[in-house]
Length: 107
Length: 118
Picture 1: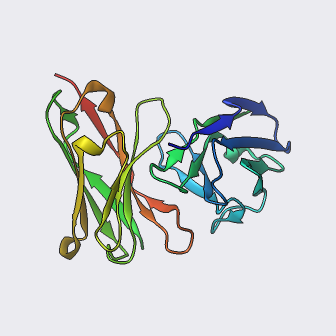
Picture 2: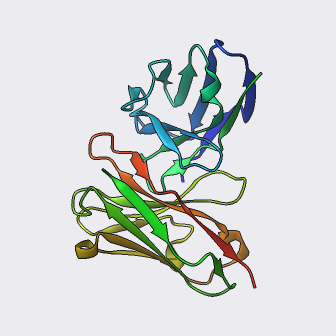
């Protein structure tokens, strides 16, 4: 199985700050990676797909990038509504696997 | 609009079989695949399995021996059956649609909490 190692596990940042969350894949997965945001008691919401493409309706302050087998989600100009848990997901091979999650809180 | 809704028993006894239904609207099961994802309380997400638009299935290898996913296209329903349930199967079970443009889960049900306990 492909392991997705996500970091950090949690972080706290101030409004308007820039934050970056990373996922390290245990092997090459190409661009077969997505990012999700999950708020308490809610279903996950797709933010980024194919490593760098912004999903419909998602603010442009969210962006995704790739460097080899490391993938990053960047949130520029952090807003209060960005709190939640963020997950990466690889669909390169079965089983599809999620990262462990990053809990983002605002100071 | 696209909607998915899970239904099933909230409580299942250990060693028994879990049966869940995902009823969809706003799209056809022959156009989009539907997946199941679960989330133990306070923990992360785990992909369970999928039924593809053509009717074939894929399962998480860790669950494959206990899992079956099927569908009734005339009723727009997808079914999950998992046998030999253990306490570690306690989780919120989501059904989710795989987008034809994004190739990722773009719409989700609200989830159904399943507790395995005697």
